[in-house]
Structure formats: C-alpha cells, structure tokens
Length: 204
Image (cartoon, rainbow, N blue to C red):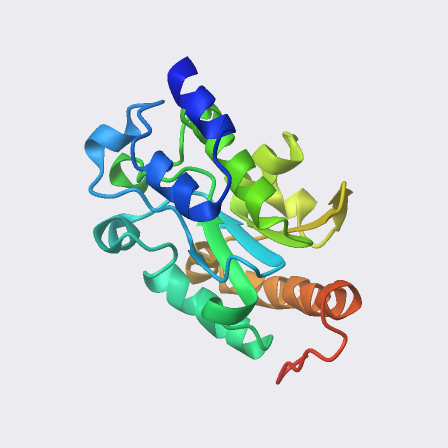
C-alpha cells in the first residue's frame, strides 16, 4: 500500500493515473471484477459527476454509467445541454465493481479515496454533482442521508458540490424525478455563473 501511495504522489497527468489505478490492489474488489472503471469524459471539463461504483454493465465495458441508470443520466444531461464528451467528466467513488452491485464497504471506500483525491486534483473541477448516499457522504464527510443533503450547495475550496439522488433511485421512486430535475437546473445556473455564461440548455 505504501509503495502504491508513493507512486500515486508522483503522478502528473490523468493518463498516468489511469494506468496506475489499473494496478491498484488496495482492497479486495479488484480480484472479483473484470475491469477497473477509471472514468470518462473531457479531462478539461469543469463539471464532474461522481457516482458510487461500477455495476455489471460498467464492469463489462470498462466505462462509467452505461447501464440503465447511465442512459437516464445521459437524458438528464442532454436536457441540461451537457454532452459526456464535451462538458463533463464522469467517475465513481470506487473504481471496481462491488460483488452483486452492493454498496461499497467503508474500508473499500477508504482504500480507493487516494485515487479519487488525485483524480479530483488533476481534473480541477469547479462543480461536482454527487449522485447518491455513498458519493455525497464520502466527499462531504457527513452521516446525513441524501434526502437531507440533496438540493443544497456545499462549497469546499474552489469546488461547488451539488448532492442529488442517484439515477437508479428514480426507477424505484419515480416521484423523485422532479427533485432531481430541480437539482440539475441549479447546476445549469451555477455552470453559467462559474464556467460559461453563454451555455445553452434546451429545457433550462
């Protein structure tokens, strides 16, 4: 672990970090998954989306948010005028799929946190959307649930964080859709304030 952290501190760009994370064995998740899902999008984007961890589709393809929840996320992003390849970088708290898509254990999250911290340091986002309990509680360092956190901006340093429900939750609780849409409208407004005053969004 110490050897890995030493290498991590020497990383200077996102490509090198992705290669290093492929070798990470800081927890047991890597042994039970097919691929490391590092993240994807525009490395220069100032909007980052953070989820919990890869699911079965993500593990198979090596890409974040490509399953049913990912397709819904793409629809929400499109309504906000955001494209994956241009406006955002998408990643997860843990980079390897937990067995059976279970919630990552606290020790697994802690083991992967150095990777996430370096990723965030290299990306230098201005806005970060936190999808679901694991992402929000980990990054905001709180025990509050997502129902209490969502919709409220939190600023840490130069980054503004917006917690909201994970897209997967909307399939089980469709009544949450309006709340999530409200949160993403807040993101668009903040994006125009901090990043691009001319940003065009078809429904915001």
